[in-house]
Length: 154
Image (cartoon, rainbow, N blue to C red):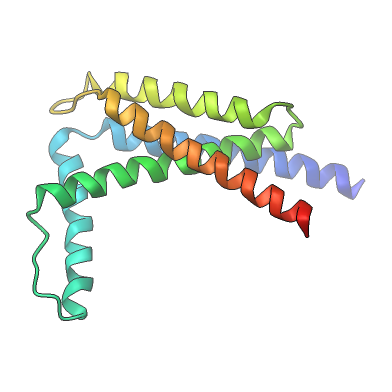
């Protein structure tokens, strides 16, 4: 009886995590271009603060290259996690081919997310971002496969 109850709780948690993460991605994508740029600037200021702690005299807060890198790493991270949450939900529901399906879901979500940005002020949908998002999902997929192989060896 306890096991059935725990399985139900795990299923609910997996769905809540997945929906919350999808909502977070939607929230970020729904921000206008100025707000989105300010988020990147905030991260650059934090990194700049760390650099100054270690006595580096460079100021990266106005660097367009660093801003680009931070934004693309954020894309990869968001979709790395989306893949993991999708995979976890499918695992809880014992869905077969969950690795492929989680990857496909992440790709489709990335595509619709970029399409959504076409309708947001000062934003644009970018094919490059779909590829970067998909690469983040691919990294998550590959990481899980490596972890599974290592567990089988041990």
